[in-house]
Amino acid sequence: MRSRTTRRRFLQTATAGCLLAGGASFENAVGGIRATGFQSPNEQPGIAFVGTGIRYHTYHGKQALKHGPCIAVCDVDSLQAGRALQVAIDHHRTAKRPLVIDAFEDYRRVLDNKDVDVVVIGTVDHWHSKIAIDSMLAGKDVYCEKPVTLTIREGQQILETQKKTGRIVQVGTQQRTEFAKRFATAAAMVREKRIGDVAEVNICLGGSRNCEPLPRATPPKTLNWDLWQGQCQHKDYRAEKIVRDQSGWGAGFPFGRAHRYYRWFYEYSGGKLTDWGAHHVDIAMWALNKLGDDIGPISIEPLEVVHPVPLDPKGMPLAEDRFNCAVSFKVKCTFSDGVVMYVRDTAKELGFTNGIMFAGRNKSRFLVNRGKLVGAPVEGLKNKPLPSGSLGSLYIDDPTEGDQYGKPGYHMTNFMECVKSRNTPASDMLSHHRMLNVCHAINIAMRLQRRVVFDPKTERFGDDRLANSFIEREQRKGFEIGA
Ligand SMILES: NC(=O)c1ccc[n+]([C@@H]2O[C@H](COP(=O)([O-])OP(=O)(O)OC[C@H]3O[C@@H](n4cnc5c(N)ncnc54)[C@H](O)[C@@H]3O)[C@@H](O)[C@H]2O)c1
Image (cartoon, rainbow, N blue to C red):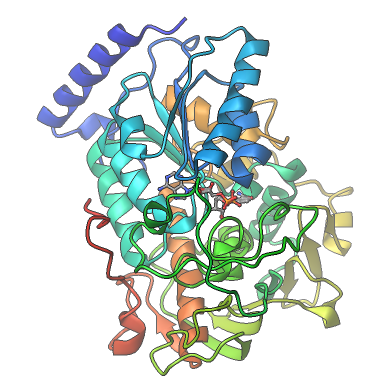
């Protein structure tokens, strides 16, 4: 049973009291206030989904609705919203929940609804920060897909808002808690020195996709192209006439600027660096314990980079009729303690194309990806298991006790548990911001086609004017992010 009125009143009173008292006993992970959660573990949060494309159908819808009713779906394409609504209604019919669910085009209508407790954001990347910030300001907790930010500044704004509002934010980097604990085990092995001191990490992400020139086209009638573009400067809609991907994650849509394929444009995303990098660079830096701001400057040197279009000296694509993110790359990141992290599209000489290979100074090494955790040090776990608590100590608040930990869908469960307990979720915003800054910095180095040095403490590139010009982007009038 939900007890909406009581809960709301309790939340407002507690938050106000906390603000008056300076919030000393209610510190959250980013050092601000901690808003109050549900009074009873039986209460179910009201859920709204903003952005209902492939991720809604493959994960959000399925996993979140286990924890509470769908109050609303929202998409700037009414066809996408309609499909999502049908899925939610079908789920409610089976679960014997009310069949009245709102469907909106404008996410602000979702935020006005007092029955919405949590907002699950699965929009295109360039909308994540604004919707996350506005949701927190409206008193909602947030599950936001990776990459949460488009720029370093956006991350700072989200953290400022989280500190101010005390809302819970879980980032959709489910490798931290799912996939049979493979990635968490890998991180714990590194921290437990099962390969001794780390010398080198190779991360393979695959390359961004390439395409033929995309013709100008009329946007589908169901799609509000202006709203879809949000903060980005207006561009003509472009899409092929045919659908190339007949199966798999992109199926059903033509190559173009919008659905599915937006991730291969720097205007909207960061190509593979923010698509898969947000997962694998995260695991590598988590394992290396390099998500603090005290790790010293990182040298980022592009060794090989191929972009599908020419770039001007400021790193801006010179053609707008095709994908523009790097299709192949090898970038050397050197941390101040000498550990080298290569981020690349593929590592055929090492025998893998997707995953993370950790190598010790003693030459021992192992590989982890979504399907496997292999190598001699992994075999060694049979005789010498990791000490108890070593996985739990990777997290700010240990989620490993839950019996679903490691299983598909647990990341959403962990979020919903934190909505109630007000603990910090496994993929907290601060560490995501710091990790994603490195992915952004790698993209900046690739676009400038030269070495840059990123300082995690100042979140700047020293006095490198051109690199610093990427820290923040101009936002289209009416779509500014104002924390
Ligand atoms: N965690 C993971 O493993 C994983 C996997 C796939 C995708 N993702 C992430 O999920 C997000 C969505 O990816 P996708 O593949 O589902 O893309 P998609 O293009 O299929 O869906 C995005 C949807 O957002 C909608 N949208 C855009 N702006 C909006 C706005 N202002 N309000 C409401 N709806 C809006 C679009 O119309 C579209 O329907 C991306 O950020 C992606 O990186 C994460």
